[in-house]
Length: 177
Image 1 (cartoon, rainbow, N blue to C red):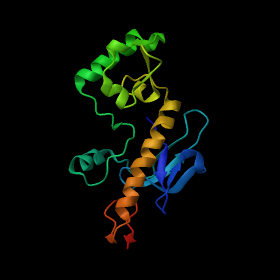
Image 2: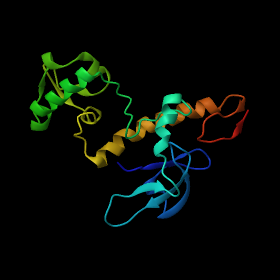
Image 3: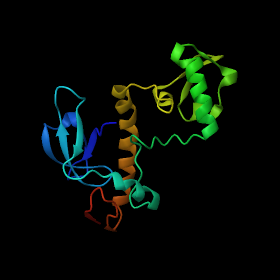
Image 4: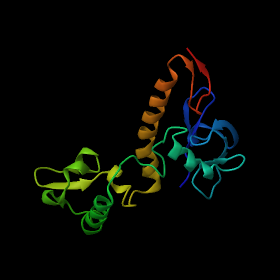
């Protein structure tokens, strides 16, 4: 998956389409490292780390050293293994064929989480968000689905920075208050 967003020095979220190609002043959402905009003609436009990539950052999520963001490896959907397997079966039998899913096969939690939506009294369809865990959402749409979730999480981080004292997130590192 491609990294499509970075954080500007003022703490604002910036997308790959917001910057020119080459080295940027943006920071990685995960580790705070510098980003380079890759805007060639072969691959989809994306950011890469200017220096070393942040693969070791996954350890920080476990220790809560910074907030988990709803990006490529954390969709905040929180499905149980059994639910995920049920969704995969429904996708194979109904979603991939573009058939409506009978209401009696739907877990009400999936509707609450926005994974499926009603098409009337008796049937459901997968939403874009619901296609993510089954691996069926095209990459171009994936970023459109994830962007609002990402912005929402960053807004929460901004609220955390609004109190007195020093900001404890790596995203801004500024003094507040």
